[in-house]
Amino acid sequence: MAMPSHHPRLLKRSYTQGELIADGFIHAAAIVAGLMAFSALFARVTIMGSLSDGLAMAVYAAGFFLLFGFSCAYNLAPDSSLKWTLRRFDHSSIYLMIAGTYTAILSQLPDHALAWTLAAVVWGGTICGVGLKLFLPGRYDRVSLLAYVALGWVAVIAFKPLTQALPSTTLALIVVGGLLYTGGIVFYRWHSLKYQNAIWHGFVACAAACHFTAIILAVGRS
Image (cartoon, rainbow, N blue to C red; front, side, top):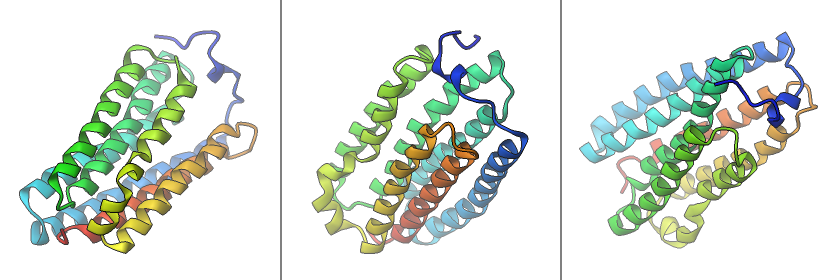
């Protein structure tokens, strides 16, 4: 499927070779760092966690690698029908990364009723979002951007019980990561800025690192 001729994506300027190299480097660094980091996480889960922790972290790891893998493929692919297809999976994987991160965090809550309730809300939103991206590609992109942010911050409705259940360092890193994701949107939308896409993905990588650190510190403490 080719990108519709009226789609706003076609109005963006083409990235220079230097910008593509910078963007590719950030993706590659994130993936390599992820391979090492998740090895450490699963080792920690083996020692300090439970089987349910391991399953939750597997979902989290899948979301992480799908996000950076599809993002790398989409952003570095030349304009073509394949790029338009990859765009669907790239945008869908954002929802999966959000839900996977929540799954890992919620697995550390001692209040199982709260954990399952929040998980149902997040995964319900994720399923709807993925369906929209896969079956109605290129539509409602601005609404989807707001949906990413809303889904990412939905945990504020349970802020008090979360503060009582999770280590303060974990909570602080979760908030910092959320702010980085949200603040990075400025660069995502700033199309005229040179290296805009690489800067945006740098924010994503740093936010993901904050959330990973928050999760690995929480494993085994619930």
